[in-house]
Image (tube, rainbow, N blue to C red; front, side, top):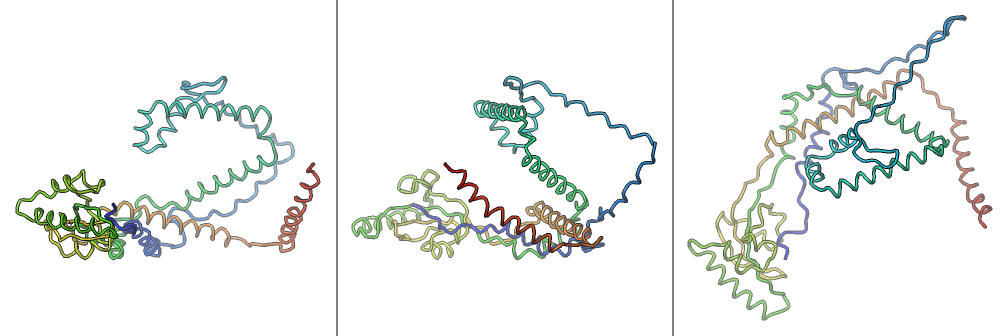
Length: 358
């Protein structure tokens, strides 16, 4: 039996932090040039190096880097191995709770090692056949390398200063966002549930009579509501904890319960409430009044949102600065030719596949 409404709880804190980032975007770069990070500006195009004079000695090639030394092997399969350093890196990338769980689950750890060995053996097999030299893979490698270089370099030139945002920025953003950080009143409710389908008049009458009797007992001085719930409640979800469902906002209770719970004072037991499933005897255990999320609770999330917002603005401005530093020229004819070539290739593929079919 469900006591809670199917309506999901509103993620107020997360939504508020996102809204703060939007509201604070313009303020984030109010000091100095709002279009750039305070740490970097777009670099000017470097001048091309002068050609070497005739007869000048050629520059010597840099010596090849020695192969990376491998640590002690943790697992091996033929010539491939998972060394200790690789395993340490993988473990460090896990959340702390996952690390603890994996350490105690030898079967899962062994399975990971076996899978990693299989992957490495497959890579070596592909390399032995020159698979990495296929033209399409070379293009994919180059594209991946460009993406990594682009993202890491752009992150470096647009990174917010280490001291941003300052305490004053955080406090100001928090004050502006207080309406979005409001938390609803939280009701701690306990219940005793007696099932009785609406269409079964005999069951409804019996459950109503039992519910009225239990309300009298629960409202008596020194009554132990939790003991009554453990003895009589038919809700398997809450019975073991004495009917307690914990703190919930009013919106998460079923529509029949909301008007009954809202006027109660802590410690009071309401008259039986009938729903389509049966009768509920409700007790308001405690009430937390509506409030605003405290500053210390949201401070870290707010700092992260403001830093992310500032870095996004600085990165966008940096890219715009690169474009504005020179003259952009687009060849319309070449652009159209590229689309025509793509369309022709797409048309030719089904015809080639049809001719190749047996």
